[in-house]
Image (cartoon, rainbow, N blue to C red):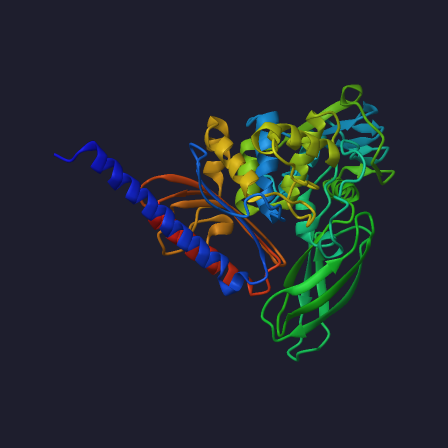
Amino acid sequence: MVSASKLFITASCLLASVALTGQNSLSKLVNDPAMKGASLSLSLIDVNTGELLMSHEPSTRLCPASVWKIFTASAALENLGEEFKFRTLICHDGTLEDGVLNGNIYIIGSGDPSLGSKHFDKNFTALMRDWVDAVKAFGIRQINGKVVANGSFVKGISLPRTRIWEDMGNYYGTAVSGININDNSYSVFFNTPMEPGGATTISRIHPEVPGLQMENEVIASTVNRDRAYIFGSPLDQKRFVRGTLPVGRQDFEVKGSLPEPLLFSAFHFKESLNAAGVTVKDGITVERETHREPSTLKRISATESPELKALLAHTLQKSDNLYAEAILMQLGARNGEASIDSGLDAIHAHTRNICESSYAYFAYDGSGLSRFTAVSSAQVTQLLHFMANDENQRKYLLNELPVAGKNGTMRSFGRRTNLEGNLRAKTGSMERVRAYAGTLTAFTGRELGFAILVNNYEQDDYLVKESIQDFLLKVYGDY
């Protein structure tokens, strides 16, 4: 019979062996040439108990890029609830006689990011059709007034002040609005010549963006990918597109951010009404600050978003910046005002006793697109520990993170390795930033939580990605 002391010694040796192996894996990651000169913050925990298993500079605050979205998502689920829905109203303020409305038609927004979105059932075309059908069903055949887009729900500046110029004009960096529609984006289609360095031409822009002025400086290149960027700020109809596109292409698509979603929504609603035989006499207008109390207007229809749990799943799986920023605004509204600062206050309040008790993180937006947002790997894993032990947070957030080798932003990570199907993570990437945070079911079945934040590396992105992937493969086998 083996004595209890021998069993204790054996178990202690096994734990020491695991710890030593883990430190070797960590040392290999830290000293990998891909990490030369970079800042690295890493934390590995037992996600259920919170026990710290391994770390490197765990308190160093670094830019998390889109990993930050789990903070926004966690606070939103806690404060708004999984069944919350955005609502957009179509109303009028006039009198209706014999099919003639003497008054205005209003679109009253609440910042719904899924309104007319390609990511859900009611895309832009279907949305316009539904709105027109609702107006006709209400008995309106002529409007002696205007189509008014009211976006007063959002207060103040709707674009984080730390958003960089290169991001603003492109679809992934769009500002939010009281009415977000068609993912706040449009597409520019280019024809490119066969000769490198030759001028490209714009074949079309879809959907039509009222007032848009596009100056094209894009040239053809042998580089076989999109390296064209659209430059322009919110409310500015002047856009410049610069960079390169592959040679010999027809209708090559580049996506931009809408200068003014309110104007876009009013314009297309009016055009859709006219096309359906409902004439609008006085054109369109937008209201950015004038509050319209829906109870004082006559409701024609209401468009509801999917439930918040579906919006959050999309946000995490596709890393959708617009959705994250719109959800931040709704958090702010619940906190008193639909503004960036109010939304950030709500996130801080949610995490104060979870991961900010020792020191604060720096937050500037809801999506992580701001390079000024900074958080440590220890703070990220502390939030993961909280989420793992909260039934709703685990069900609607942790379990909805992209799966390695399977879907979302993790589709290519760990494919055909032991990480495939065993690792769920939110990714974050921008120039010289690579971050991963999530859960890993190790070889023994133990559930781990991890956060790896890397900033200011000089090697190619794929080398940093491979270095992190190799480290996590070792972790899978060691624990």
